[in-house]
Length: 231
Image 1 (cartoon, rainbow, N blue to C red):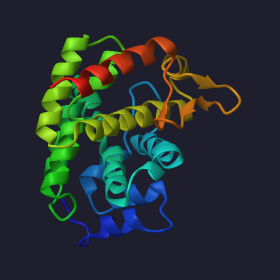
Image 2 (tube, one colour; image 1 turned 45 degrees about the horizontal axis):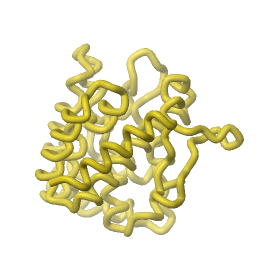
Image 3 (cartoon, one colour; image 1 turned 90 degrees about the horizontal axis):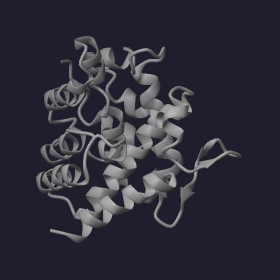
């Protein structure tokens, strides 16, 4: 893997005139990652992982970036840039469940000058599984979701509320990134309360998150309360 110039990615991420493309450009000298970006994002749809990733980063910059201080903001940009990086390999293997395993493998191959040890641990912890999404879609029970969230939180070493918020923002950016591309809209829009005038999810300025549709919002509040209020 060819390394980037020292700290090049930090400069790109922190630039005053930051654009989502800057995050992907930070990996311009990493052939492995660039190859993945040019592959299909989802089997059966004709757009690249790069296009989906830019869409996800656009959602973050539009709705969420101002909530984070610069260091956390750059961590979130890195997280979202790499969140699906293992998906093309999983698609090629014919088993999408391998996505997270390949993602972690690629992140662990990044040089330390790009990703420090604490940031690497944080990235791998949040990207190891789709804990929240699988629960909201009915693939995990409440108990299964809480078990995985608590284990991930313990590994992250982060504050509970911060950890859950970061994971929630990541999940919502990823989901809305698909709707911006016009694919899977019918399947994904039902997750959110929808603002027809804006063709976008309803954003709740009080909690700084999108509002899920009523049944999904109830599940989200349940898991949030159980996770935050119990050891």
